[in-house]
Length: 421
Image 1: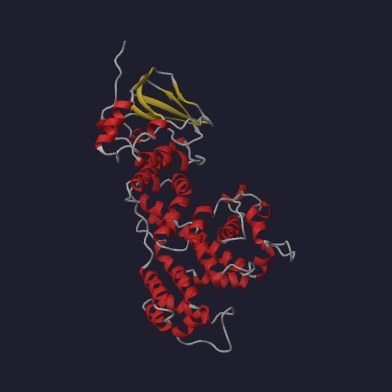
Image 2: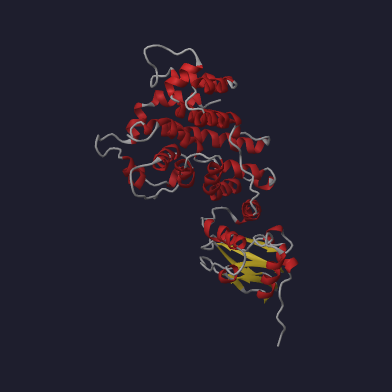
């Protein structure tokens, strides 16, 4: 009888999703696992499989085949072999051995016996990351490495997330701690002339303008209101986050900014037709809905093969932005309703109890912004999704969201201009 071979703790420590375990747990896991062997031509994973087990290639070569027939070979010497094989479920790939191989199979119940950090890593790899793999096989390796790096940093509590701009932090502290001191808030905003000019412009806009134009920032803060001023400062300060020192990534940042400000302008208009939604909160929610993509682009600087591969880069952002966006807004201590927006901005069939919220608003704004683009060619009909019914357009007045936006073209242009620079 052949002797059972166990992977060494050193072997396990090299594998993504396992390397953060302490040595004693790696030793325990090592003794519970068996190195498996398979001849050339053995199928290790079926297309469409829901099996939650994690497979790792230790030696040899496998062939990964997509549903459209595209193929890619992965050797144990490739960096991607340190990650689970075709980890998404249901599997979009068929995996077959292209040579005799040795590999590991780690069942979900085995994972559950060990440290919670391993269990959480498994959950992120297999459950949270249940998305359609739209990338081609040729893009899998690069995207896989970027995604694994982000999940490893997340599990190890070292994830690099963008910080809220300093002026937004200081204005927020003044609004929340100084009991409505408009003059102090105004003095803080004056340190950023570009934002100060925009606050004055908003205060003198048709929505806020009274019988006279305001000339000082203190008057503008009083007229708009402290909470709305705070949200506007965050909105105007966000532009600096949508920049990169990489010319390749900066083009992607610009594209992301243009889409975000379009969604923000639409949400700003539509919020005025929802009785309990605030327009400035709607504006900010629209601008923040894709904030998770900024974190992905930040990591992509270390992966030039992803940064220069547009389909792979967009696929990585699509897969990760909802979860990362929610985390960023939590880190910034913004209201939970804004974190819900980041998590659900493309959850077209989202249903919930109670009245409409900002996630509903941004879902509709996002669909309007995407309508007619290549990406939006297969989008659902706006009138048929739950968020549209929640917002109540056309139900009582017979006026649709399209009608509202058509009538607000001048206002949209003004809002886009405020967010332009």
